[in-house]
Length: 518
Image 1 (cartoon, rainbow, N blue to C red):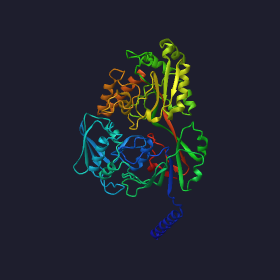
Image 2: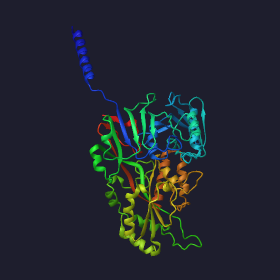
Image 3: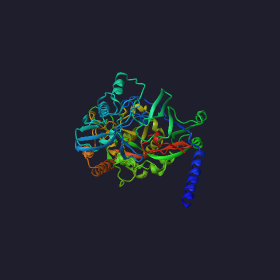
Image 4: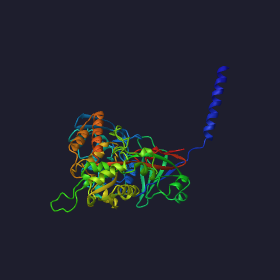
């Protein structure tokens, strides 16, 4: 009798739970509209994804051998594991059974061809990233072997940027540079692309990993405006980025919830350390920024706290070096520049003759809101400042042809989450065949003796702990030499409409699998 009563109670409990589950309201499919700011540059994964807007979309469609989690730590991607056979040889075990959007299954041959193409294609933006790769080949069943020219402890973060696609698709893309399709392995598939308007993505049913809960997403080639929400279907959720200084910030707060985070970027004031007076027939005064005392004095006259306040940024944006705190190689022992305008002004007026105080401040148009306060502080210190705003294309990693002495206001982002990227691309002397100094706007030959060699030594170190110490050593040397002045850790605000939880990432990518309907 006892057993029958217990059974009856269990059946009754099951009925109540089941009935409750039946009555529970099921989640409706949710779509997201993300305001991407600009249209994508194209659909070729190796020649068009340099812009952040394109890379943002592609990161939902394509995958690489390794990935980054929310904390920007390396995690397996299309490779389940990897190892060093020796200091020059890496082997990657390729994930089995991974389906491509356009049909077929991922093979080691597809991976090897993708990396080789990213390395050798004349229009590939990844050529300098992979310049240390000597060869890549498929070996055995699902393994890829990658050989480097010298030991490379920085290889994995760089490989993260190489999207993998089928060999046949990439060969067709080479025949048609205006390819109108995408074929990746990611959790979302390209549904359509209306040039100048939007990219539509849909959840990929054949995805090898956990699928996201967002059914569809639109990446619009526009930024936030007041009237947008009223034009969207009721089952969509809006997400977008705005800076605190935007005039639309107050209205955005009525539409969506803000989430602030530090990105991988730092705003810098870089000195042009070339000397126009070095030529025998030059009538120009010597470049005052060649004097370290002057560079340090400039760092003293900028009111960093006032700058942050004017831009609506928190104290987290205070920068002490050329990368933010969550980048590998950050040195916690370094302090932010000290604001001491009287001391700085005294050095500037004593060391620089009046005729040499006319300087040019080169400001990327996207950084105009920072340019005005910096020009104000430099003028108050005794400089005659000419501010120029060249097109962004002119400052995309190359020197701007302006008359020295000049200062360049730039924002550099370590997409790899590793300070080695900044050191090689911005701090090293220019070496075109390797990509060293590709983004360097200050000099052709490093003015700090031994720094090039120290950067290369850090890149070749295979032990992560030792490499981190070497990177921090380079950071201390560069900061104390004032080749540039760190101004701000970039802080952004991601707005997400109520009904979806979508926390921002340090790398600023909007990965749809991380968006969760409430």
